[in-house]
Length: 344
Image (cartoon, rainbow, N blue to C red; front, top):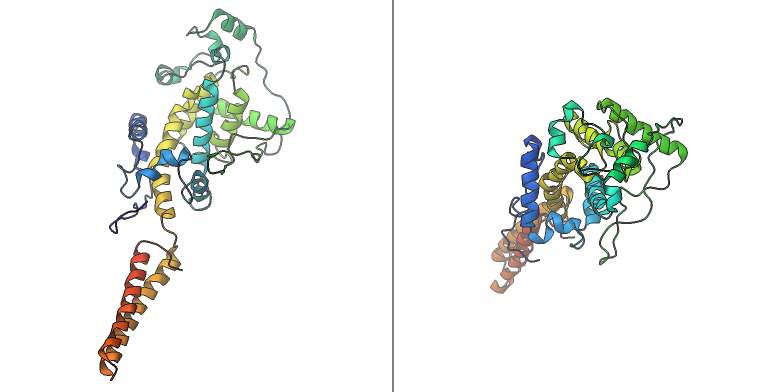
């Protein structure tokens, strides 16, 4: 990519404007961003080739790949949980869509009507008559829900394995946050009890159905991202946390995550992504930029000094052209420092 000398990096964003938006405004922003295929129209300085969707889909090259984006959030912003959850949610939506219809029928969609009436305690799926076959209803009625009575383990959250996630074309992979080692009995008890405690704190009047698809994985996600004090706790309001827990107590359908998934995606698109582009598009940190500025000013001053000395000396006039060399190097160094580039 070649850009003009007037190109400027995107300005640093300390807080996403979507923090004060309603859910409808966030959802509209995400839809428009996906439809346009670029965040460059919203944030000046972000090329279309480095848009959020291109980076996440693995369509960029180093140093702007998904791996570098994750490293930036983990080590610079110290907030990698949003991208980790977003990647898991995308993968979960895909896997849920590939689930057989007989299993998806056990996890009905969490609709706006459910969200509007969540304070009235939505009835459990076993009692709902919405688009469920008689065989499914009979299975739900005969299923006994067992609450785990195993002893509490230690942390219960296991580190992800070495399997990866990323673009196959560039041979790079990133460990997905949804990939876990097989949990031990104590670990399984730990995250299940954390999820049960979260449902109780959200006033869910019934225990979730364990026969719903991906219920065990949902419990892991609740214990990892949603409950207060979780290892990768998302920055959610108490209302958002209660809403998603009530939805997950009713179903494992991806629509139950819609509220927080939109919040997370807005934060990534409006704050994390522009700041990542600003940080990674230049290869010089602040000390190096200050050094480059000082070096440029010094080189220009030496050029003037050389010109003065040669003018006052008896040397031929042609030798005065040597001062132009110092001026050229100094101006080039200052221009590089202005763009945040390292000249070493």
